[in-house]
Image 1: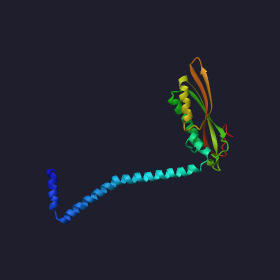
Image 2: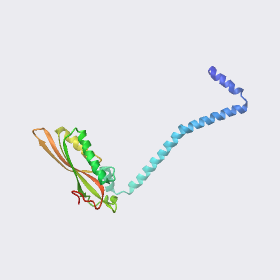
Image 3: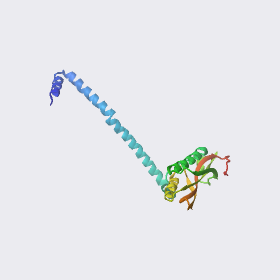
Image 4: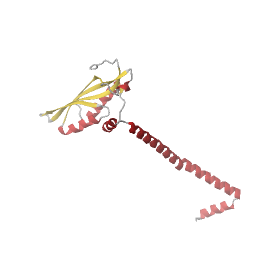
Length: 203
C-alpha cells in the first residue's frame, strides 16, 4: 500500500463512526449512479433493442407461415417490394437514374426520351393506388454507344437500379468503323397517377 493510501486510510479510521458510514454511503451512491449512467444504461438499451428484434423476428415467422408458397418464392426472386411514388417524382427519378448511369460509365453523348406508356395491367398492386388513382407505366428510351467490354457492366447497372422497375427491350448493334456497340434499351418505372391522367403515350 502506498504512503498516500495509508494516510487516507488512517484519516478514514480516525473519523467518528457516523462520518465513516456517511463516507461509505456516499461512495456507494456514486458507484450506483456511475453504473446506472454507463454500464446499466447500455445494458438496458441493448436489452430493449434485443427484445424489439426478437418481436420482429417472431412476427415475421408467424406471417411467413401463412404465406402461400408462390408468394415466398416471389419474395426470394424479386426482393423487397417498394411502393410506387407519384408520377412526377417517378419520372424525375427515372431520368436521374439514366443520367447517373451514363455519368458512371463516362458516356457524355446519349439520347433519352420519356413518355407515359399506359396503365399497368390489373394486379394486386392496383389496390395500392386506391380508388382515385392507378398504376401508370413510365417508359424511358435510352440510346448510346459504348465499347464492347463495357456492355455487360452498363446493362447490369440498369438492371440493378432501384429506380428502374423493368427493362422492356435491349437492342445491340456493332459499329465497325468506331469499334463500339450501339445500345438502344427501353427502361420502365411504375408510378401512382390520377385516373384522369392523359399524357402522351398514355391510355
